Length: 565
Image 1 (cartoon, one colour):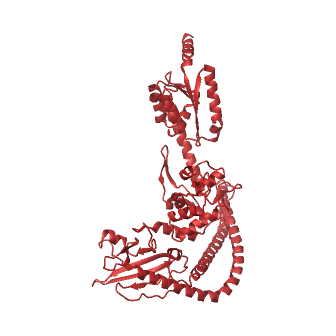
Image 2: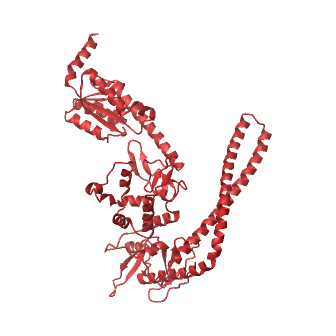
Image 3: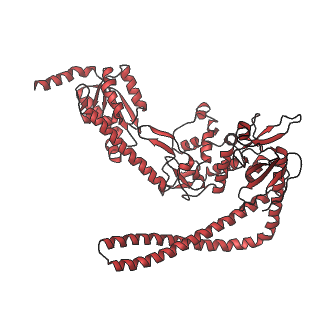
């Protein structure tokens, strides 16, 4: 009894000396039941009432809402620790020990070292932890809190992985050009207001322009950046550094990184990609994964661009190289490759009395003839070959198109009607196949439970498997037909594209990047040292890659030009 009175008297004596800091934290990782009971307002009310009953003066309430307890990168926690160091507060209270943090090494450091060293008392109300008195169980509570957080982290990331595998969008804000579907969780719908800007960005990239060019054009056309759109719609309150520097025109300045990320995001051709980061518990994001390591599920929503355009842009971004010395790009930048080592051919001037522009293999230039040969192609020669081949292809396309146009129109109408019927039949076949799979599972369960005899099971299985085989054959035939239709559509796209250049008389980078996928240069050296250099041109959208080999000599002679559609 005397000991109890001693404690009460001690608390009474110390009460006027306390300057209390109340700390509240709520994490996105907390499960829903804990979030309800641990809400910020609930924590604040409980601790203020606790202090009022003891006559303690509360100097400040510190709040970190939406911050993980696995690290100390929390703004109000840092402010609290700074106030402790500067003697502005000398008593810290949290609702429970996990509110201070869930990393047991960090929380134990604060409890056992930091607070005592700065003469600051710490209390975790619901856990009966008080640094004024010894608590031998506190370290175990810290470990339990961390294990709890680790378990929640695993569940959260497992859930995200599951959603990614199903092609569901799990981000807080939809990608620029889309909005979240209010009627279906995890589904995206096209934002008619911003989607045209996305389409324009991809068209510029397809025509061979880099992110710097696109950034300048968007600013010239006064297109607001995604951050501005998100803020206007109430999704976020963030401002870019350019908006802060120039409140009037800063919203038109785009970040090149944002543009680059858009150009590699499969969401724009109708796919959903997830699991893009390498993550580790307590540390967080370690690095970005390569696009080929993402979980990507296609055909999840309406596309803004077609997949062909997306793939062409991706190839151009991958192959795009540095600028020349004068800051400009060569006409064939990103298009011309070495047929032996696979590296780019870069442009330079010869050292002759009358220098000319030539392309040569970058491996040869950097490492010498032991690693690759020169693959020398004169710029003017390459230009003439490309121009003549494009002119020839355009003429042939016009001739072929005039003959087939009337027949194609009638055929397309009939084909579309047949395709719609087949699509409906295919959906029904897939639904029936899923139902049969479930039926097979139930048959096995009934056999094991001895609800049906083995002979009945075998009879029903034989009938079911026969129907399954027919359905799989039907589905395979439809998908093969659909593939042929895609090839037909690709052929039409190629004819429409190349016919636009029937009157072409000169080349520019936009034309080359729109038409050409790759120019491959080969070099073979005979035993007598004669260099045999050839090149072939591969085109975007061309359904049959029947590229012509153009033989090139380093002295004189015409390249063979007999292109075929």
